[in-house]
Length: 106
Ligand SMILES: [Zn+2]
Image 1 (cartoon, rainbow, N blue to C red):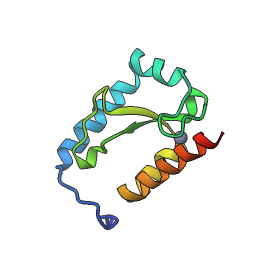
Image 2: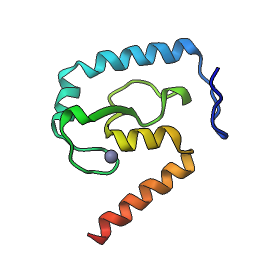
Image 3: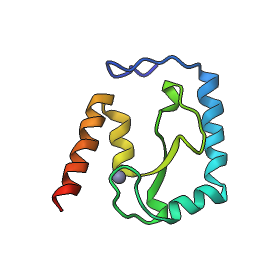
Image 4: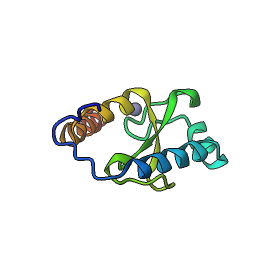
């Protein structure tokens, strides 16, 4: 067992996680998702990427009960995706706020 970062409470079953991950794999192959990543924009930082650089991110992580639905998945660049994974929710919020203030300064 990997230890979880503090503040990270797992409330879902392994079966739930497995099922939602399988759904994500299937959703990645749909025309809907292909169109999304073809736009080439990261949902979080808004920067442009080639479709192959964008990953599928669950806004509410599966591990916190988020489901693989069109309303809960967004294209994210690798940087945002890995930050989201490793930051605490509060740190992630700060990161997003920082991105927004950078946008406003432009
Ligand atoms: Zn990004």
